[in-house]
Length: 235
Image 1 (spheres, rainbow, N blue to C red):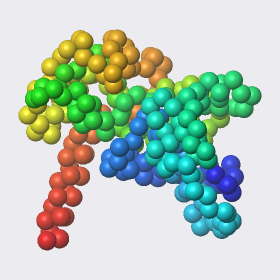
Image 2: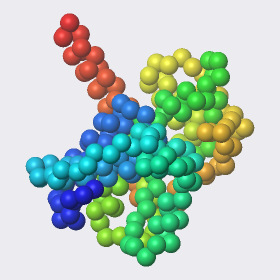
Image 3: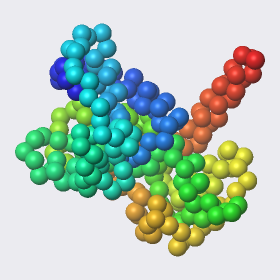
Protein backbone atom coordinates (compact mmCIF):
# COMPACT_ATOMS: atom_id res chain seq x y z
CA UNK A 1 0.00 0.00 0.00
CA UNK A 2 1.54 3.36 -1.01
CA UNK A 3 2.95 5.47 1.80
CA UNK A 4 3.29 2.72 4.40
CA UNK A 5 6.79 2.55 5.79
CA UNK A 6 8.13 -0.36 7.83
CA UNK A 7 8.17 1.89 10.86
CA UNK A 8 4.52 2.92 10.48
CA UNK A 9 3.44 -0.66 9.90
CA UNK A 10 5.10 -1.87 13.06
CA UNK A 11 3.49 0.88 15.18
CA UNK A 12 0.03 -0.70 14.91
CA UNK A 13 -1.02 -2.90 17.84
CA UNK A 14 -1.57 -6.41 16.35
CA UNK A 15 -4.26 -7.09 18.99
CA UNK A 16 -6.31 -4.17 17.59
CA UNK A 17 -5.94 -5.61 14.10
CA UNK A 18 -6.97 -9.03 15.37
CA UNK A 19 -10.15 -7.69 16.98
CA UNK A 20 -11.25 -5.96 13.75
CA UNK A 21 -10.54 -9.03 11.62
CA UNK A 22 -12.34 -11.30 14.11
CA UNK A 23 -15.43 -9.09 13.99
CA UNK A 24 -15.40 -9.00 10.20
CA UNK A 25 -15.07 -12.78 9.86
CA UNK A 26 -17.95 -13.32 12.30
CA UNK A 27 -20.32 -11.39 10.02
CA UNK A 28 -18.99 -12.09 6.52
CA UNK A 29 -18.11 -15.13 4.47
CA UNK A 30 -14.32 -15.14 4.12
CA UNK A 31 -12.35 -17.88 2.38
CA UNK A 32 -9.14 -19.22 3.86
CA UNK A 33 -7.17 -17.82 0.93
CA UNK A 34 -8.48 -14.31 1.66
CA UNK A 35 -7.63 -14.10 5.36
CA UNK A 36 -3.98 -13.12 5.01
CA UNK A 37 -4.84 -10.32 2.57
CA UNK A 38 -7.63 -9.14 4.89
CA UNK A 39 -5.29 -8.95 7.89
CA UNK A 40 -2.62 -7.13 5.89
CA UNK A 41 -5.19 -4.69 4.52
CA UNK A 42 -6.63 -3.90 7.96
CA UNK A 43 -3.17 -3.57 9.51
CA UNK A 44 -2.05 -1.26 6.70
CA UNK A 45 -5.21 0.85 6.89
CA UNK A 46 -4.70 1.35 10.64
CA UNK A 47 -1.12 2.42 9.98
CA UNK A 48 -2.41 5.16 7.68
CA UNK A 49 -4.84 6.68 10.17
CA UNK A 50 -4.02 10.32 10.85
CA UNK A 51 -1.46 10.51 8.04
CA UNK A 52 -1.83 12.66 4.93
CA UNK A 53 -2.55 10.74 1.76
CA UNK A 54 -1.53 11.58 -1.78
CA UNK A 55 -4.25 11.99 -4.38
CA UNK A 56 -4.14 9.14 -6.84
CA UNK A 57 -5.90 8.37 -10.07
CA UNK A 58 -9.05 6.35 -9.43
CA UNK A 59 -9.02 3.15 -11.49
CA UNK A 60 -11.95 0.83 -12.12
CA UNK A 61 -10.99 -2.86 -11.69
CA UNK A 62 -12.07 -5.48 -14.20
CA UNK A 63 -13.85 -7.36 -11.38
CA UNK A 64 -14.55 -6.58 -7.74
CA UNK A 65 -11.90 -7.50 -5.19
CA UNK A 66 -14.30 -10.03 -3.63
CA UNK A 67 -14.69 -11.74 -7.01
CA UNK A 68 -10.98 -11.71 -7.81
CA UNK A 69 -9.97 -14.55 -5.45
CA UNK A 70 -11.42 -17.96 -6.33
CA UNK A 71 -10.75 -21.48 -5.08
CA UNK A 72 -8.22 -22.41 -7.77
CA UNK A 73 -7.35 -19.17 -9.54
CA UNK A 74 -7.07 -15.41 -9.14
CA UNK A 75 -8.40 -12.76 -11.53
CA UNK A 76 -6.25 -9.82 -12.58
CA UNK A 77 -8.00 -6.63 -11.46
CA UNK A 78 -6.52 -4.76 -14.42
CA UNK A 79 -7.52 -6.95 -17.36
CA UNK A 80 -9.64 -9.77 -15.91
CA UNK A 81 -7.11 -12.51 -16.82
CA UNK A 82 -7.50 -15.71 -14.79
CA UNK A 83 -4.30 -17.19 -13.37
CA UNK A 84 -3.70 -20.28 -11.27
CA UNK A 85 -2.85 -19.63 -7.65
CA UNK A 86 0.87 -20.25 -7.27
CA UNK A 87 1.74 -17.45 -4.88
CA UNK A 88 3.55 -19.64 -2.39
CA UNK A 89 5.80 -21.19 -5.02
CA UNK A 90 6.57 -17.79 -6.54
CA UNK A 91 7.42 -16.41 -3.11
CA UNK A 92 9.64 -19.37 -2.23
CA UNK A 93 11.48 -19.14 -5.54
CA UNK A 94 12.12 -15.41 -5.21
CA UNK A 95 15.17 -13.84 -3.57
CA UNK A 96 13.07 -11.77 -1.15
CA UNK A 97 12.83 -12.59 2.57
CA UNK A 98 9.42 -14.06 3.39
CA UNK A 99 7.19 -15.79 5.90
CA UNK A 100 4.18 -17.90 4.90
CA UNK A 101 1.48 -18.51 7.51
CA UNK A 102 -0.83 -21.51 7.13
CA UNK A 103 -3.78 -21.68 9.51
CA UNK A 104 -6.23 -24.47 10.23
CA UNK A 105 -10.01 -24.03 9.86
CA UNK A 106 -11.71 -21.32 11.92
CA UNK A 107 -14.31 -21.85 14.64
CA UNK A 108 -16.37 -19.35 12.66
CA UNK A 109 -16.61 -21.85 9.77
CA UNK A 110 -18.56 -24.55 11.68
CA UNK A 111 -21.94 -23.40 10.39
CA UNK A 112 -20.71 -23.44 6.81
CA UNK A 113 -19.17 -26.90 7.24
CA UNK A 114 -22.44 -28.22 8.60
CA UNK A 115 -24.47 -26.57 5.83
CA UNK A 116 -22.30 -27.96 3.03
CA UNK A 117 -22.47 -31.48 4.49
CA UNK A 118 -26.21 -31.60 5.14
CA UNK A 119 -28.39 -34.21 3.43
CA UNK A 120 -31.99 -33.90 4.54
CA UNK A 121 -31.87 -33.78 8.33
CA UNK A 122 -28.44 -35.42 8.53
CA UNK A 123 -25.00 -33.86 8.53
CA UNK A 124 -22.59 -36.46 7.12
CA UNK A 125 -18.94 -35.91 8.01
CA UNK A 126 -15.78 -38.00 7.94
CA UNK A 127 -14.54 -38.75 11.49
CA UNK A 128 -11.06 -37.37 10.77
CA UNK A 129 -8.95 -35.16 13.01
CA UNK A 130 -9.37 -31.39 12.93
CA UNK A 131 -7.65 -28.70 15.02
CA UNK A 132 -9.64 -25.49 14.46
CA UNK A 133 -8.91 -22.08 15.92
CA UNK A 134 -10.60 -18.74 16.57
CA UNK A 135 -10.33 -16.03 13.92
CA UNK A 136 -8.94 -13.77 16.63
CA UNK A 137 -6.04 -16.16 17.23
CA UNK A 138 -5.47 -16.45 13.47
CA UNK A 139 -5.27 -12.68 13.15
CA UNK A 140 -2.88 -12.45 16.10
CA UNK A 141 -0.67 -15.15 14.63
CA UNK A 142 -0.51 -13.59 11.18
CA UNK A 143 0.11 -10.12 12.62
CA UNK A 144 2.90 -11.48 14.84
CA UNK A 145 4.64 -13.30 12.00
CA UNK A 146 4.17 -10.50 9.46
CA UNK A 147 5.71 -7.89 11.75
CA UNK A 148 8.57 -10.13 12.88
CA UNK A 149 11.79 -11.23 11.25
CA UNK A 150 11.16 -13.24 8.04
CA UNK A 151 11.64 -16.97 8.62
CA UNK A 152 12.07 -17.82 4.92
CA UNK A 153 9.70 -20.72 5.43
CA UNK A 154 6.20 -21.69 6.49
CA UNK A 155 4.72 -21.16 9.95
CA UNK A 156 1.72 -23.34 10.81
CA UNK A 157 -0.80 -22.11 13.38
CA UNK A 158 -3.67 -24.09 14.88
CA UNK A 159 -6.08 -24.30 17.78
CA UNK A 160 -5.17 -25.72 21.20
CA UNK A 161 -7.45 -28.79 20.86
CA UNK A 162 -7.95 -31.67 18.42
CA UNK A 163 -11.40 -33.03 17.62
CA UNK A 164 -12.95 -35.52 15.27
CA UNK A 165 -14.68 -33.50 12.55
CA UNK A 166 -18.07 -35.08 13.23
CA UNK A 167 -17.60 -34.52 16.97
CA UNK A 168 -16.78 -30.83 16.48
CA UNK A 169 -19.89 -30.16 14.41
CA UNK A 170 -22.04 -32.22 16.78
CA UNK A 171 -20.88 -30.05 19.71
CA UNK A 172 -21.51 -26.87 17.72
CA UNK A 173 -25.02 -27.83 16.60
CA UNK A 174 -25.96 -28.91 20.11
CA UNK A 175 -24.83 -25.52 21.46
CA UNK A 176 -26.94 -23.80 18.79
CA UNK A 177 -29.99 -25.96 19.55
CA UNK A 178 -29.84 -27.25 15.98
CA UNK A 179 -31.82 -30.53 15.68
CA UNK A 180 -29.85 -31.98 12.75
CA UNK A 181 -28.24 -35.36 13.37
CA UNK A 182 -24.49 -35.64 12.74
CA UNK A 183 -23.48 -38.93 11.15
CA UNK A 184 -19.88 -40.19 11.04
CA UNK A 185 -19.31 -41.29 7.45
CA UNK A 186 -15.74 -42.25 6.41
CA UNK A 187 -16.69 -41.73 2.75
CA UNK A 188 -18.18 -38.25 3.22
CA UNK A 189 -16.49 -35.58 1.11
CA UNK A 190 -15.15 -32.30 2.47
CA UNK A 191 -15.14 -29.49 -0.11
CA UNK A 192 -15.34 -32.21 -2.74
CA UNK A 193 -12.35 -34.18 -1.42
CA UNK A 194 -12.04 -37.48 0.42
CA UNK A 195 -10.14 -36.82 3.64
CA UNK A 196 -7.38 -38.83 5.27
CA UNK A 197 -6.92 -39.06 9.05
CA UNK A 198 -4.53 -36.09 9.31
CA UNK A 199 -5.46 -34.01 6.25
CA UNK A 200 -6.93 -31.15 8.30
CA UNK A 201 -4.34 -30.91 11.08
CA UNK A 202 -0.85 -29.36 11.07
CA UNK A 203 2.49 -30.85 11.99
CA UNK A 204 3.36 -31.29 15.67
CA UNK A 205 5.49 -28.11 15.78
CA UNK A 206 2.60 -25.78 14.87
CA UNK A 207 2.12 -22.64 16.97
CA UNK A 208 -1.10 -22.94 19.00
CA UNK A 209 -3.78 -20.35 19.70
CA UNK A 210 -5.21 -19.81 23.16
CA UNK A 211 -9.01 -19.79 22.83
CA UNK A 212 -10.70 -23.18 23.27
CA UNK A 213 -13.78 -24.14 21.29
CA UNK A 214 -16.07 -24.39 24.33
CA UNK A 215 -15.04 -20.93 25.49
CA UNK A 216 -15.59 -19.54 21.99
CA UNK A 217 -19.09 -21.03 21.89
CA UNK A 218 -19.87 -19.44 25.26
CA UNK A 219 -18.54 -16.05 24.14
CA UNK A 220 -20.51 -16.24 20.89
CA UNK A 221 -23.74 -17.12 22.72
CA UNK A 222 -23.18 -14.28 25.19
CA UNK A 223 -22.59 -11.78 22.38
CA UNK A 224 -25.69 -12.90 20.49
CA UNK A 225 -27.79 -12.65 23.66
CA UNK A 226 -26.53 -9.13 24.32
CA UNK A 227 -27.28 -8.07 20.74
CA UNK A 228 -30.75 -9.57 20.95
CA UNK A 229 -31.47 -7.81 24.26
CA UNK A 230 -30.27 -4.47 22.84
CA UNK A 231 -32.48 -4.94 19.76
CA UNK A 232 -35.55 -5.55 21.94
CA UNK A 233 -34.86 -2.45 24.02
CA UNK A 234 -34.60 -0.32 20.89
CA UNK A 235 -38.22 -1.17 19.90
